[in-house]
Length: 449
Image (tube, rainbow, N blue to C red; front, top):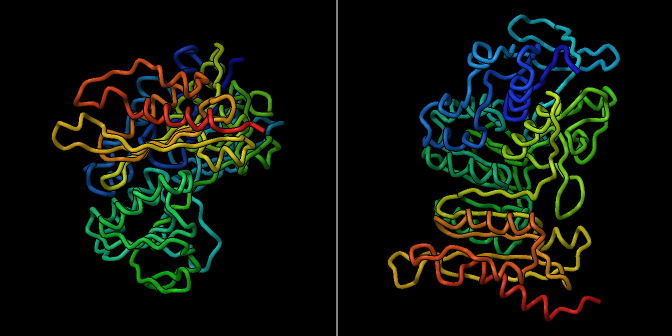
């Protein structure tokens, strides 16, 4: 199919799709509607902008709109927000902020790459101007401006976003309190792996309040867990939700958490309409079920797949493992696949094992330790997931285990992996080998019925 391609969303997924189409169809008309003021930026870098490690927001922009317009003939329209779809008339209703007008944009094919929005709970005062959600670069710039003169902040939520933003604010000299309704931070980790993160936050001077749900935002503070906490600034770190309501209203199928349902080629249920990124579902390769995973790595890959197919090629996106890494204070975290709790929730009979090991030969100075927890299926020994926590130099070991997961390897096979060794990088038996050996023993000792 040729004709006008309209892309809703100008960040990772949307621009990846647009560029793949442009490479394959040099003369095709491509229009991108982006509600914000930026294209192709590194949203994962926003905490480092707020914390002062990145000096200017433009350093996070991989390719500005002027480049797409002048070098690739892509009509990027900033400040245009898609609000409704008419699939029969092949039309997007968009709000042009600069012109203060509603505009109908016709399309022959459509890519929905609208991303996700911060979860904002329905609580008193949550719409107060001092409350900030952080998902887009515009959000980050507004938050950075709001930190001027701030002495005390409350971060709501102890997941990736909340912990990264808490550290960033501490680097700005702000006194930070984290309120988290759950009994641990990082609910995607098992409790024993998450514990060192809580310790690191406390060492950094953060007041961590677990089992303390937010109840209201008031002038000069919040109410959480029945206590009033003073604050000049409130940051929401409760995760994100897919921006897909207008697609659902138009009759496009949605699934997990209201995310747009897509097939392996990123096609939606509507003819000629594709979706990619944080607004759509993914297929989890271990859980064998649809999931909503909001990660830049996934968005870029899905956008590429959609663009290849729209441009006349053939590509598929096989699925995700939920592999993620981050650094909080002086602690690195990595995870892939399913945690023990998740594996049980998806119906697996599983076993788990943990080890602590040095990440270089112990006779060298400044030896650091790493903790790895891995989960395998009872009986078969097939790896189901792993989590890593430790100091500098630990997190990227998760990539070995993500590769093993993708290959469907058993823990016995992981023991025999030919991994690199030198004293500055580990022991003869790498920590990955060690956790596989420990887990293999548990597998052998576990009855399957």
